[in-house]
Length: 341
Image 1 (cartoon, rainbow, N blue to C red):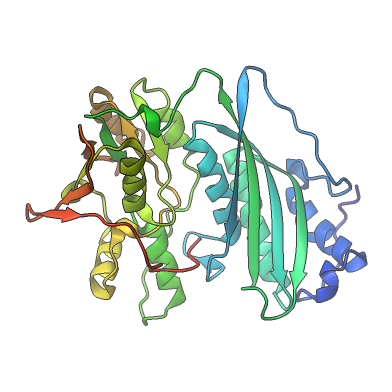
Image 2 (tube, rainbow, N blue to C red):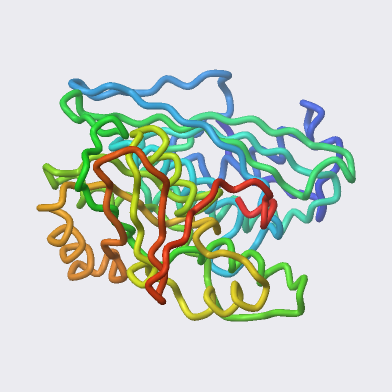
């Protein structure tokens, strides 16, 4: 494969998606040079992958349409890696391989595309995953929000590991690895729709260090990353699938001052805002406090906290407020912040 960089135009043209010379130059000069050392072979239509013994495979797929494409703490490239890796990690899997599909709007600046792919490559290297296959499409102006990315991830889970909502028991504790709503709020601030600015960064990151530590706990039952719909949606799904009520404590839920201020000003509920580097887990009561303490002391998740308890009978998700009252957590109907991931 020839990965020698070619000179590219300043902007993406429709010809970059026609399957001919311009498309080959875009792929070789931009994608292959950044991802080639991670296993991307652009000369084949299907890539072979090695699978360890004694494991079962897990697969996930996702799409990313964040607006703006770049935001404090990351861009759509790093977000695509983190989102895919995290879906595998909270299932107990070790992420191994990814495929990448890029949908690029005509007129997109090549420099912007380079920053996106650079961030994607750096995030993949940090997470220890290889991008082994992909595809590129160029859409006419107005048919795409600059760049859309779609990924598929493949990971390996030890045969003996069993996690899931079916393992959750009455009395289990609910923990969260850090402050909630940071990603959704940082993207909102980056849009400057309300004349607001701030130095809040997205929490977009690989959660592998967190999940690897939690997986050592025999009482671990279930993990999920609270992306679209946030912490509240994870709790609601868990209550629905287990047919057990969940009691959350508002004052125990970590929340940064910028998120709290923006939500209070604009009327958003931080419990429904997306996170891209957090883990919500259900864990046996006897393991919960030690697990949280270990996450904090390690520095991996200094704001980790026990935030609730699984009930012993069917019921709703209830939040005990800071004033001591009870608030019913309802399912999300409207999308408060479209195109945040």
